[in-house]
Image 1: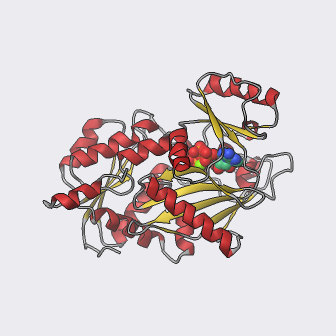
Image 2 (image 1 turned 135 degrees about the horizontal axis):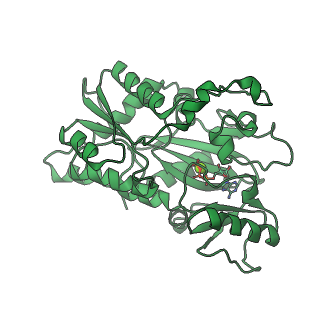
Length: 365
Ligand SMILES: Nc1ncnc2c1ncn2[C@@H]1O[C@H](COP(=O)(O)OP(=O)(O)OP(=O)(O)O)[C@@H](O)[C@H]1O
Ligand SMILES: [Mg+2]
């Protein structure tokens, strides 16, 4: 692990435009929900999360400045011109486009400022789910079989086995994923394709639905990366007619009952042999797609415990106690220590006059 550099100057960059939807949740009375919530409703806003990360990093001895770039290139460049030692990159969109996430990371490269997480190549690759899946398949790593559609038309004999999952190919954060995303026959598939094409930009991914456990595998580090304790999702409290998936509402909407009926179990209830296979696949997928520092892989097991990578999330959510940070805590890494470690990985890439080390700032191909 790289050595700690006291009082390094960390620039925490994020992009929040307009009001935060979660702000309104602070006034909701749980008694009006019509069901018993299992989790707090007033979830952290983006600003709350930034404050939590900034203060944890300060406690770790860094000097932290956080800047909301507000979709404004001048704000972004002014912040970079002040030459921080390192950028903590929490920018996920620009002009509302996730596809520009990589372009923002590219700007840090042009300014020669080290930054946390993945580089432009990896961010762009993983944002294109079908392309990332092709890369996995080309290297013998498993991902559900799929077809990519540019129009809402698919022949009846499409060669995939039902049930199928219909989802936007370039969205993130479960956008477009609901109970209707799982279809069981050709009639259901064509209806859902019409619906999803009306709402989301193509291409649309139709992939085989993997019936079985869902796992989130967080990976940390570079030389070499390692998997943290695996998270398993427990869907047993969902009504029996609800598909066992993490829909948009289940993930992001605390006013929806599904949000309160899916729970995490960490470490996952897997045999050592299966856990090892999942970890190996996760780490290989991390390396293959050029992830750096930290990432989360969404994985499913089928009934025979065969492993399928659903997607690779470089720079995943760092909310305390959730997802990546839940796994880190299980590995006895506190929130602050995990953030510090991520900053140290980035600082270790600090550009030096040595051309050999300069190459390390680009993702492996
Ligand atoms: N092929 C599949 N088989 C079974 N379930 C699936 C499949 N694809 C997606 N899902 C379900 O839908 C959820 C969201 O899908 P996915 O992770 O691909 O989308 P995302 O929008 O990128 O989500 P995230 O919020 O994790 O970034 C998954 O967590 C899983 O529950
Ligand atoms: Mg996902």
